[in-house]
Amino acid sequence: MTVGGLKTLMAAVLCAGLSSSAMSAGEPPDPVRAIEQTFRGGDAARAFERLEQALATRPDQARLRFLQGVMLSESGRQAEAEAVYERLTQDYPELPEPYNNLAVLQAAQGRLDSARELLETALRNDPGYRTARENLGDVLVRLAVRAYEQAGGGPVADLALQRKLQRLRELLAR
Image (cartoon, rainbow, N blue to C red; front, top):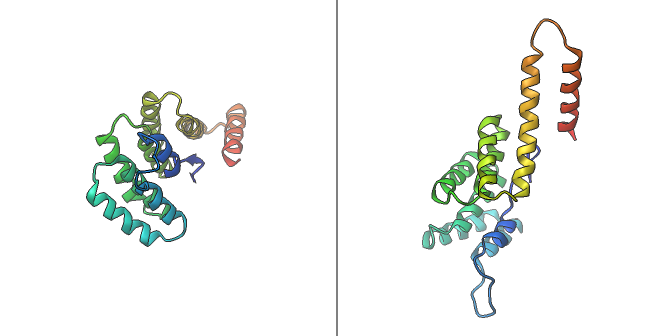
């Protein structure tokens, strides 16, 4: 999923990434995967119901809470998703994924400076986090456009500045 060209980390990726151990044949099914499958299968109401039940018994499980943020975001409930990701960054400051997803939501609202800071935190936590690195690049391009637009606000049109701005806008349009 992209929000304004930026990418959120999907729950399926997180399931693999935050999984502390692989399931063995005797273990019960993973509730995060089961809830996500229900959600992806089109039964959002049932998925949210199952998620609430799981969170009632495991309120501190980061994977469940992250899935909650993903589901809220994908359901168009951005403010609620933002609150979930914000809380995750406070409770689990070492995890890069909530910072990335929070940054995507903030960038979509035009809060580019905040998004940049969040992505930089994600990358301090995990320098190899490719999605956050790409999102940071997208945010920096948007910040450059904003700076060029502000610089070009004078009475004399600077052709070099206008060319740079045009190229950046073309890049963002792709």
